[in-house]
Image 1 (cartoon, rainbow, N blue to C red):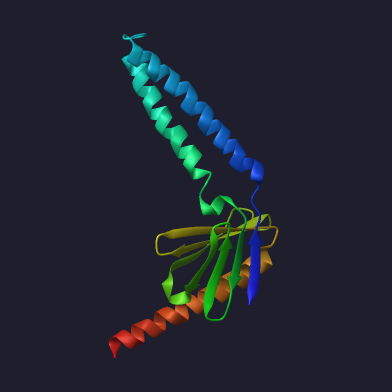
Image 2: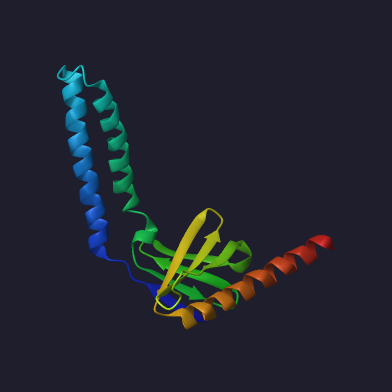
Length: 157
């Protein structure tokens, strides 16, 4: 079994939340003033504020996603376990839709594995750990490919 933990910075979540709240408050004040009758000639600015309000809501909600917190990946022989702040998700390798290795321009600094499981999308960064990333990718690719080949042979019979 291979275990890898991705640490996320708590300050980043709070920054996204504060920026989202600030954008929402500023744009809401403009929209409320427009509704009350001030600045009737500034309809374009109010529409722009409405769009920025939606963006502020998006930033706020985006900071609560489960990938914004620390995640521990456990790659077992038969299943993949992902522990996050909302609990634990267990997937079999036949549920994995896509596994890809993102090779950056300078491979020695970081490597990334992109893992798609149904509608869930996981990006696993490896900073200064290229060899470990290659080991995990080979392990994942072997398991996922074996399950896909097994399903294809079962379907053809």
